[in-house]
Image (tube, helix red, strand yellow):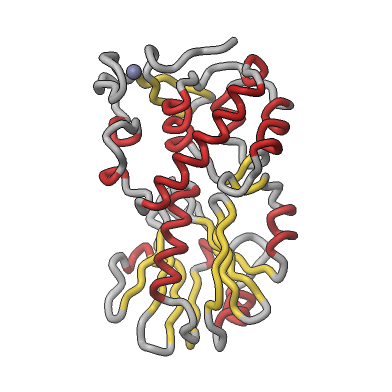
Length: 262
Ligand SMILES: [Zn+2]
């Protein structure tokens, strides 16, 4: 599922392909339109304008077209495809912006859980969605303050988009592995120092992953993500990676490297 690093990579892709080119035709499938918006509203916001700038907030991407912003959420498997003649996956191209240079920017989503929407107020949209601050922009003090007020398990708090936006199942595991913290730890049991270190690790992991286009095959050998498999060798000790379940989500841990606080 696209998380913050993936969405940053999609933003970079859009910026290096479709930016500043006038949109001459817009098509969007009903299935990916956010409830409350319409094809007409998206087309009116897009056609005749250029994609002028892009801003990511957690797992959401906002793209400015004239006075409006297109909103993209990538669900489980969504991404963009910039193409000239033939989209890479026509069956799953659910939105298509034809540009004046003859190319198209397609929103592709094999599992239609993402959406396309339109807004004229990015800050208001983020607030209405109940999203916390972006995980790469949140300050250390604010992160510590928010986490200190949470109950329950550490991984649940870290992946709660209302606390901090952008961390999902895969990167939460990576962050907690690198921080040496067990995902089932009680948030309440962590002191201020541990939460400060967690903030540093979170931003380090997300930035490094975004810089590597969120491609696990390019991640450092010391990372967990390329070894998300029960029984895999821990990249840091002689132990073994285990698959456990945390709040119903498959979670990978090294029981030797990651301490559980309760
Ligand atoms: Zn280990």
